[in-house]
Each structure stands twice: as structure tokens, then as C-alpha cells.
Image (cartoon, rainbow, N blue to C red; front, top):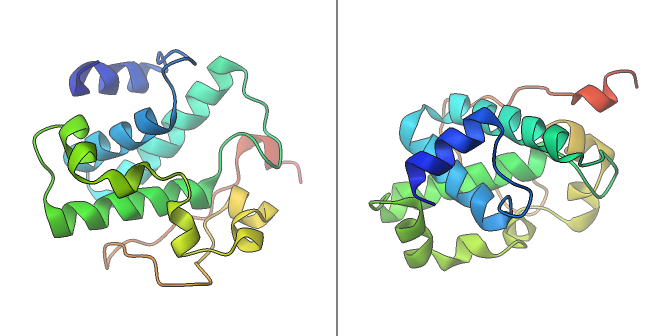
Amino acid sequence: MDDDTLHDAFERGDVSAAHWNHEAHLRVAWILLQRHPFGEAVDRMREGILRLNQSHGVPDAPDRGYHETLTCAFMCAIWATIQSAGAGESSLGFLEVNPHLRAKTLARLYYSRPRMMSPEAKRAFVSPDLAPLPHPADWVPRPVITTSHASE
């Protein structure tokens, strides 16, 4: 699937569960970062993942569902890689020359497992406890509580 097709499917909430994997998350993040300012790209990523999770029937549990800190951490890592290595021509080309982004454990460079797996980190962005997370100087993480946590 090319970048425009993936973007449009993501925005419609129409990426099949079989195709909505880690690489698709990374590709959509790259696409959004090419089309929008950082904060807006993060917001669109959050909204799109929540929409897809709902349409795919993904339960919101401690180890499943949307995770705000993890999403922000990967958006920051992709943004920083674009700043240092360039964006490339496509999401697939970008990931091909930056394979470190494909590591699902990338956030462990910044976060201890207990901090990343905390309920607070799942609901809202929490700052890293191992190393500073690269991000645009003007980015202010928004306090977010997903709909399933709204009554807590």
C-alpha cells in the first residue's frame, strides 16, 4: 500500500486489523509528520489509533489498547530521525534506511519497564526516566485520558 492510500485508510478508520501492525503504525507516523506540525500529527495519530482500535474491537486493558506515552515516544523518535537523517521520499524508504525504528523495544532507551507499563503512562504522556526524549522545543504534551478511563 502506498503512502497516500495508507493515510486515507487511516484517516477513515479503514485499515484492516491484519494490516494494522507495528510497521503500519510507523509508516502512518512518518506520513503524519510530513503533512502536519508535530503536535497536530500526534493528535491525529492518537485519534486514528483510537478509531481503529474501536473498529477492530481491541479491548482496553493494561497490556492492550491505546498507550499514550508509547505513541508519543515513537512519534518523537521518528521526528528526531527525520531531523538528523532526513525524511526520504516515502515511509517505506525512510524505514528501510532507519531500521532502528522497527524495533518495538525502542522506547526502552528512554523508559524503564515499570514506568512505561504504569497505568498513568497508558492514559497520559509521562516523561522518561532513563534518558531525555527528543522532541520539538515547542511541543507540550496534552493531558489525555482515553474514553475507557474517563470514569476512573
